[in-house]
Image (cartoon, rainbow over all chains, first blue to last red; front, side, top):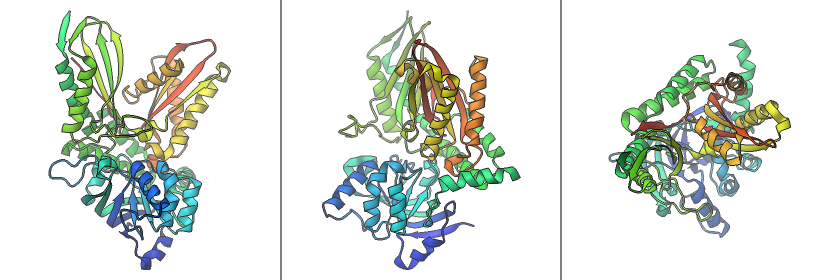
Length: 190
Length: 279
């Protein structure tokens, strides 16, 4: 069964997060903000100097992506996730500001895991290297900050049925540990 | 002596940058399909299905299979009896510039590692040259994503660490790479030579046909055993668990110094892109 989730997360839907478990497949509907290395550094600096982010962080979902250029007639090029751990240093402060969803791929450090639980936020994984496929779930893309960063600019992305997997849930389970462990346990029965 | 114009090189490289980014090589697709057949784990099956669907869509719709269209690695095998009229290096860079512009490929190169300003045309490409007999020019273009490049490692092991030390270092590198490097992976290993040459042959090992074996039976066996052990890790496609962590593991070796046992492990993602031509 696939679960559908709206972004940004509304306060009334916060309880819904508690039901999600690492490994659950989820389809996201709504708005994601793209940001990767350079934009994270800038957002971190904005927050450190008491300024606002280029988008409302309340309930917001950030997608770690640097898309390829949109061919003529398309809204975006390939748009798969980049490695999340490079954003670790900048992440807790973003979660503290109200961000509720992170989408990327790969391991997170302990500070991020603690901050996710403390802020009741979720980390999702999208399929790395499936940028062509994922681009089909993006209905529109608009640069809203730092256009000079090119692919690293912050974009507002409207998505429909954007497929992700819960990577770290609110009980602290991480799919990168629970997945391989469950496979090892199950393989004797294959 | 045969003469070619540098403009021919530009044209070929431009086309190859585009084509390599849209078309995942047939041997990789074949390995992914085989892996899909042997996966019993539902989440691993669905990830492999997504990857295969993605790769088919990219090829059919002329889209980059991955948004990280890489730094362009360009391998040139230059025949010693070939004369290239014009500036070879500039011809390569112009080919990359045009290919990344015309193919709507991502510009992922910064001019300085600390200043980090994008060059906006994906140059410079990294160029690897070798002089070979004959009067032809062999060109391989390999767009290399850096999610996986970042998970690569090199160790200057002690000769006393021997085969066991090599095995341990390779498997440890694969486990550390885990989901960050977009498994199922292609793993290139370079053993011997020097600090830099071990790294170079580990990169060249990524260009071998998937599943081909080192001609030396000892290393062929080591490749098979390490591939098996890596897939026992259970990391699986995207790290969600499963049988398929590594699609292929290729070892290349070089003679080395009496004091040395360099070992480089270059990690490639499942979008293991490269295309070759001879002109």
